[in-house]
Amino acid sequence: MRTPTAISSCVAQDARSINLFSTTPLIHSIPLSKLCHPHPVYLKLDLLQQSGSFKDRGMAHLCATVHKVYNANHKQKQGETTDDMAPRMKVISSSGGNAGLAVTTVARNIPEMDVSVVVPETTKPMVVEKLRSLGADVTVHGANWNCADKLARQLVDEAKKGGGNAVYVSPFDNPLLWTGHSTVIDEIVTQLLESPSSTNLKMGAVLASVGGGGLLCGILEGIERNFYGGNEVRAQTIRGSKVVACETEGAASFAASFNASSSADTLGGKKEISMVRLDGITSVATSLGALEVTPAVIQRAHRHQDRGEGGSGDDVLSYVCTDSEAINACVEFATEHRMLVEPACGAALAPLYSERLRSKLLEELQGDESSAIVVEVCGGSGVNLDLLEGWKTQFLGDAA
Image (cartoon, rainbow, N blue to C red; front, side, top):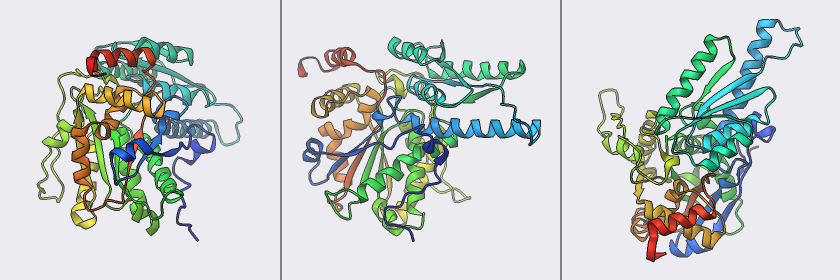
């Protein structure tokens, strides 16, 4: 018999069983709950993953799966009776920093796996140094992530032509990543149900930053799995959830495509997808610096909205904050909760700390006053006290 809080044990189980990623705390924030009264606010602290960001989840599932398949293929080629170890394999990734740190952190705990990471020139020196200290082969190339990604793919092709065992690892555009990220919703639902502070607590909204769309794909996948998973208690906890996609001006690639996509049904019963590519990234939140999101995140967002139109109330909201609002959220979060996050993560906190955005969110939640607001505190390693102080001076000035 399934318990009301039962979590699906099969999702990313290989990675979870060898501790490639962690179950992180969900804490009740008293300061933010006061700001958002009557809605209690909960913080999902994925900044406590080993690499410093949520990306451990997806990278753990992807790398564990790729390694398992690689070893199985080697054994099949050599014959079932061989005890020969497969040759070392290399994963090559492109990253604005955090995905590279995640894949390097994960790969260190997988036998016979090496890592190369290509990062754009906008990556902070402290992140590059940390990558190298963890054992990654790091190449700095290009003005933005898209340029770095092009080189990473070329390096994989060259390695394969030379007989090497290289695998390309996208920082956001891979279904294995999305499934790994989806575990955050499994945990949130369980933790809300087990929360001692309230009974029958529902998730009215979940706020998450969007770069290339990998995290948002995972969140939407996790909601769908729990909604249709056959456990009515878990389904009721997330029924009617608003998924808030958070970005900064100058890096809002999701908003561009989401707003451009038509909501009108086509002949096939599907919604039209119109992808928009930004000309460049001009935001301080360089970790959100994908010029274009994966089309899958627009498709999944529409599917979530379709369910809401069927009467459940589910919706996807696109919120774009200014750099100043993101930085202010980082500063306020550090002051109230004594934790540091990047401006990219500040984008997900800004709808609560910014009066302009908070009023919009609370209006969306009218009629469901007892529901909880959950923030995916995704973290990020490109921050320290000196950087935060510099951003505070640059963007907040006298207001700080």
